[in-house]
Image (cartoon, rainbow, N blue to C red; front, side):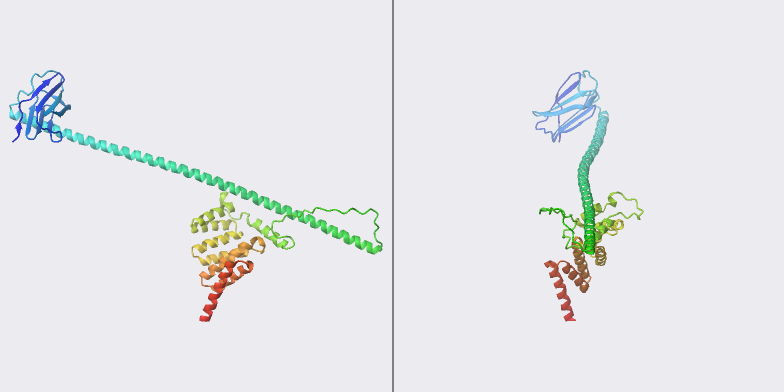
Length: 404
C-alpha cells in the first residue's frame, strides 16, 4: 500500500511556488514525477503525493531537486500573483480531478512526443552536419592530393621537357659536327687531289723536256708542322673504317627521324616527337604495362616507319606477352633497317639476333634459333653468355637428333 503524504510545507511569491515534500531516502533515479500546468504528482515507493493546483504554472520552467530527505519542487506561475492557497477549490470533486489528471497525462504525452520529435530532428540535423563536415574534409583532402599530383606532374613535365630540349640540342650539334667534318674532309681530299694532279703534270713536263729543275731558292730549314685531324662521328680510326658505309648509315639515321608527312593526322607536338614517344613507351615497359607500350611503339612506327629501334623495342614487348611470332617479325624488320652494318649499330644487331633466336626457341624452332645465336656470336665473339646459350641449343639439337 502506498503511503499518501498529506502534510507538506509550502511557500510562495508572486512568481514562484515552493513545495517541501517529505520523502525519506528518495533517490533521483527512482523518483517518479508527473506534472502539467495544473497538476503535480511525486512518488517514491512507498510514498505518494499529488496536488491539484489552485492556478496555472509553467511546467517547462519548473524544477524538482532532492535534499535531506525532502523533495523540493519549485514551480513557476504563469500569471504572477499570490494564490494564498495551494489546492484547487474543487480538489474534492473526484470526477473533476479525474479530468484534470487525464488532461495532465495528455499534456505530458504531447510534450514527450514533441521532445522526441525535437530530439529526432536535432539528431538528423547533427547527422547532416556531420556528413557535410566529413564531405568537406574529404573534399579538402582530395584537393590537397590533386594539388600534390599536379605539382608532381608539372615537375616531371618540366624535367622531361628539359631532357627533350637537351636531346634535340645534342642531336643538332652532332649533325652539325658531322656535316662540318664531311665538308672539311672533302676540302682536304680536293686539295690532295689537286696537289697530286699538279705533281703529275710537273713530272710529265720535266720528263718531256728532259731537264732537271734547277733550285734557284735556298733550301728551307727543317721544322715541325702541327697536323689537326678531322673529328669523326664514329670511334674507329679512318684507316680501319668504311667511310662510305658509315656516311650512308648516318644519312639513313637522319632521314628516318623525319616525320611522315603522308599521314593526314591531327597530332600534337609530343605525338610527333620520336624521343618523347620512346620515353613514354619505356615508362610503360618498366611499369609492366606491355600492351600500352606496344600501342605507343605502334603509333611511333606509323610516324617513323624506318627507325630500327622502334621495331626492336616493340619486339621485346611482344616477347613479354608471349606473342612470339610478332616478336620474330619485329626483330627481322629491325635487322633489315640496321643496314649497312657498321660499328654504330653493332649492339642493336646483336640484341635483335639474340631476341629473335630466343623467340624461335620459344616456338620450338631450335634450328632457326641457333642460327641467330651463332650470328650474334660472330658479331660479339667475346660474349660468354651468348656462347653458352648457343652451346645449350646445339646440345639440345644433337641430343634430339641422336634420340630420333
